[in-house]
Image 1 (spheres, one colour):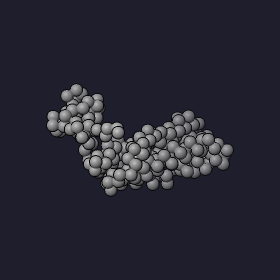
Image 2 (spheres, rainbow, N blue to C red):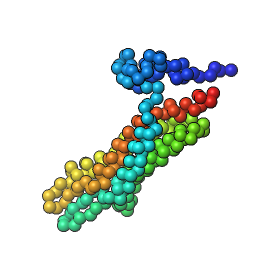
Image 3 (spheres, rainbow, N blue to C red):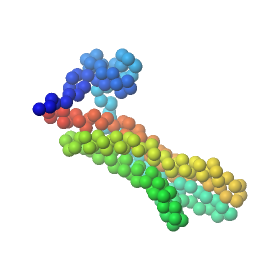
Image 4 (cartoon, rainbow, N blue to C red):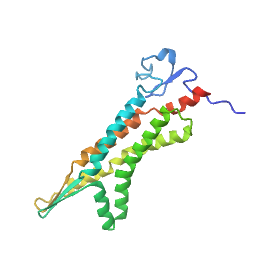
Length: 208
């Protein structure tokens, strides 16, 4: 019969967030790591509250990010404003399915999925669920990994604005949605960073 896995917390140790040195909890308190000088905490302070605050702010910013125009195109005296979704529809109609798929996944699906997954993780922790902690940890890792790629749409707009400058003939400018969209990406990344996945396992360790 295999021995029960032990954790740093059960052994009275605190792991440094930066250099991963294990320090006895009695020596840690609210002090600093003796090796790198980083602050020592058994768990990230106010992890759940900070993650909720950042997620709610991101959810609010998500609405104007998708409703307001991402790009404003001027060509031969006509002006056209496109939202993220209208841009996806345009590429579909023009036959560029690959570009449409990349923009849809990176700019619409991924941010929404990150919001949903982080909310699910927070609710599961607050309700003290014991359901599949390993799978929930994997979900968190995926969320943290793919979050930065949500900036693809902002990169595309930046490149277009830099390249399409033909004076009175044609020009592309970033719309107000670009700021809101970038804010959503940053806030969700900060929310994922604020969430401490170790608290998923705390309830299981307490029960055992």
